[in-house]
Each structure stands twice: as C-alpha cells, then as structure tokens.
Amino acid sequence: MIAAQPPDPAAVIDLLGVLAYGELSAFDRMAADARMAPTTELRAALSEVAAVEMGHYRKLVDRLTELGADPQQAMAPFVEPIEAFHARTEPHNWGEALVKAYVGDGLAADFYREIAAYVDEATRALVIEALADSGNSEFAIREVGVLIDGDPTAASRLSLWGRRLVGEAISQAQQVAADRDALVRLIVGGAGDLTGIGQLTDRITNRHVERMTAIGLSN
Image (tube, rainbow, N blue to C red; front, side, top):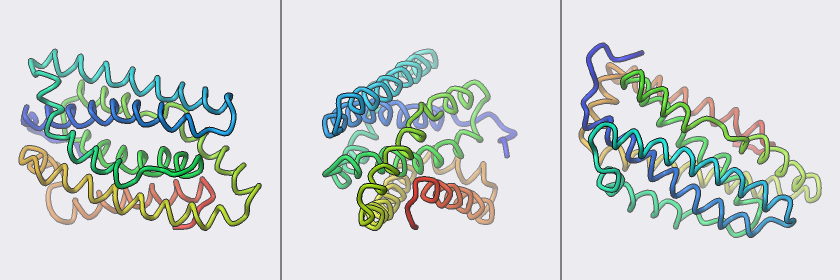
C-alpha cells in the first residue's frame, strides 16, 4: 500500500541514510570476505559484486545531497547498529561468507524494500534499484551447492548459521527502526494497523523461507 500523504522528510532521510551506510559496509565486508575464496576466480567474482554495492552507495549519497541532507550526518545514527551486526556475524569460512551475503543481506533488503513502499516515487525507485540483486543470489546458490555436494555435512552447519543470521538481522532491523521515531511513524502509518504490520512480517518471513530453500538449506 502506498501512503496517500507525502512522507515525513526525516523518515526519507533516515531510510536513505541507513541504506547508504549499509551499502558502504557491504562493500567493505564483501571485499574482505573475497579473500576467503578458494580460487582467484571466485575471489574476483565476489569482488565484482562488492563493486556493485559501491555504485549503489554513490547513488544513495547523491540523492541525500539532492534532498539537502549531509550524507555523513544521515548515515551516522546507523553506523553503530550495522557494525555491531557485522561484528556478531563475522563469517569464519567461505561457506559462512556466502550464506551471510545471501541470507542475511537478503532479509535486510526485504525489510527496507517494504518500508520503501511508503515513500515518494523517486525515492522508492532508487531504493528498489539499490536493493536489486546484483548477481549475488545466483553466485551464492551455485557456490553453496558446490560446497554441499563436496561435503554433505555442510548443509546442516550452514543451516544453523543461516538461522543465526536471521535472528541477528531481525534484531538489527528492529533496533534501527525503534531508535528512529520518523521511521517508526512511517512504518506504522504505511502499514495502517497491527494487522498490516503482521502481514508485512509474514511477507518477509515467506521470502526468507523461499531463499533458504533455494540455497539448499533448512529453516
């Protein structure tokens, strides 16, 4: 449902700010995780995905500037929760890095994509573009499949890791939203009521289940 009234400018700035820092952080993390790749070909592939994240970051920062906001100030409130999430979910091997990039990032993207339904058309289009799959899903599904084929026990270990990521990602998203009054008002106003919020949560949960199934892991 699209909000009938213009969104609170503060909520739009918050949404773009959290996404911009998220993209910057994703670039840093993927570039570092690429060093765990077992081959130079795979290292290059993940590095290319990281480069796409930086392109998204640049567009989000440009939009913040267009709106008269200071990008650094807009991102500042989200540095601590995003970095805390990554600190709690630092992968220890190539398989965990792949699942985090696919499952953890995917769930967060679903959450912010839902919020984008309640903002203006120009911002919504930019958010959808920034959250679009940059080839990461296909890459992760293929490479996790290779790992599972080579080691049948990998599926259970990575499934546990995926479930942990989901819990941490949900906690992070809730913290980000709860700490920003404008975002809370945007979500509640856009969803309409508790039933709408429940339906939003159900949609995100269903997409997560589909994602885990696609990568060959259990929920």
